[in-house]
Amino acid sequence: MASSTAQLKALIFDVDGTLAETERDGHRPAFNQAFVDAGLDWQWSEALYGDLLEISGGKERILAYIQQSQPNFVLPSGFSNLTEFIKHLHATKTTYYKQYAAAGKIPLRPGVKRLLAEARAKGVRLAIATTTTPANVQALLENTLGADSLSWFDVIAAGDMVPKKKPAPDIFEYALAHLKLPPENCLGFEDTNNGLLSATQTGLKTIVTVNDYTRQQDFAKATLVISDFGEPNQPFQVIAGNAHGARYFDIALAEALLA
Ligand code: XBP
Image (cartoon, rainbow, N blue to C red; front, side):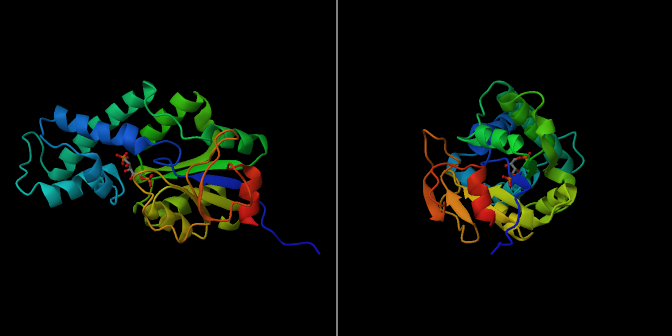
């Protein structure tokens, strides 16, 4: 009897923590360098940054930090309001992030390049749904996958393109709308509980690859939780869910998970 399994047509990737360890290698150092440039004595330690990651979006994260931890903050001269100052500070941070990417300081996580290549070879479409600034995505992709790699993705949904950031579903809804595909034909990839909530609210089955910032989070809604995508000579660890005997994440496993 023929089974009515959904066909895999697209993979929708988060960026930060999923494609690369950007929070560790890029964002946190870039925030701290921007604070130095602005003459601020703020320094976000790894532990503090882990807490701040609960807030999606760099500008939103700076605002929350000021409200929670800098009660005596005085707006520097030359700025008419806090929003304007945060925008300026965040633009400096983005400049540093791009520099780190260009210097090769933000490598891709295991298996990412292989999985993207296999998807393209097999006609499975690619998309991105991320909270980060579009310029960061561009810098990361161009410097790790080559100048033409932006064109591999049918849609790069990023940053302020939607009003509400993760855990709201808006950014994954935006990506699905541009793919013109129902969630049943796609898989989402995330590394955080906030991202998982965002993706699964759209109906997407979602795979989580954990990292040091996120491995203790609640991933009960995930279809599969693994250490990373793995490589043939560097298998992933299965943390939760059924990996169908696979040792690394490939399109055959993606199809098995969607079925
Ligand atoms: C990542 C974010 C971003 C980055 C910083 O979330 O929340 O804010 O930490 O980037 P996700 P910006 O993994 O869900 O994409 O400073 O450009 O916002």
